[in-house]
Image 1 (cartoon, rainbow, N blue to C red):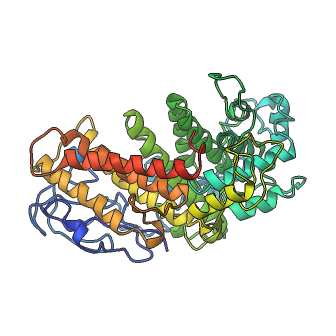
Image 2: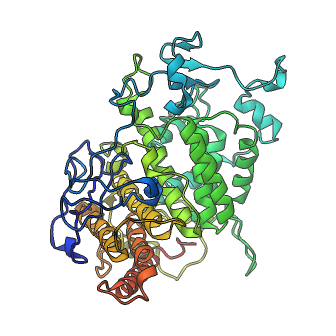
Length: 536
């Protein structure tokens, strides 16, 4: 069951009142985030007028408030979706004539505005897919052919781009422990099996079977190097590049592969963008993330593939889940980079209907095992060849101290990821309704808008399952990815209330910002006390 949340009831409700009730949870198949419905700001339940909290993002200026407080699967307060002139459409009809296959046999999506569905009887339309020729000039030139990975590696001089196997093992251990739980865009169990057989000649797949592409491995290593004790400068004050070599190699490969959309390329771009955030290279992260999103849209990842009743079994279960994971990684990354550097988001809520990935996967139930900076687990002796002198504690004392703070626990990777996706939806509404350049909320006060958005955050928080809950005042510390989820929540509260913190009113915005900042400091303090040197 995917993580689900719903907005609180429509109407002017006293601030924070949602915390006194149990937040309603959607039915297993329901996703309360699609841009096909509006959340109205009305003076009373069932009242008319108001603007959608989906807001400036959803052409708010041209939208009149609709009547009815309509419930439905999205919870109380959801207005009836506005139908387009061509509706009703079945889910099958919605994709007939809108899918094509590129030269890599990857599915690409073309919306109805393209008009392709009108000429679906064309000879280029076969077996449910368009088949367009590759881009190029006439007459065809040899250099226009699609290059293989081996050809690209030779072209950029990266035949030996990967480090030795011992270093790869250490980097991958760090990746699975500290990157994958935050950003599960690959299937850990399948990739581990594949990487254990590096000489495989099977082609790679979105599900992680076959040979793992070099560009994806380099992107994984560029991120994982931040959590390893490799190649650290010995001179004080010297800049630590931390994976820059892997990033540069990955970029050189990508420069010859942008023109052909592939899911693995989207994954690599997302990881590189995520890495650049960590080192403060925000402009680079912004551009890399933008390319990932555009390529994801080209592949149709934003559409709900579960509703594509294709006459052939095009996608396996794993491939469907991979598409969902990658799309929601795009959504999450877009929301946080846009809010961090104060720029418009690229993804609009009205433009996608992709559901959350399934949580009934091995990634959810795997044990989370923290590792040292040398790549060894805390239940084993450290690698003496790579461990710097410590505090003088014995290995047994060191292990006991750490494991007391971090006992073995389930990762809950996917439920945490889905909760982060649900939170990203609310962050989008905050940015669209509070920070957008052209905001026009018809007939509503800013305090009413603030109240509803605040209740959305409260509803999200109360809907967290027990294994994702965390109390900053508690001595029990969850894994880093769950701590990070709560850091995002408190940051969202500050994002919402900061513009109102200096204004008099019934909402205690200044107090909420202060309390949230203190909670963030407590979260970071907890993490640093357990894994010194992890956050760098």
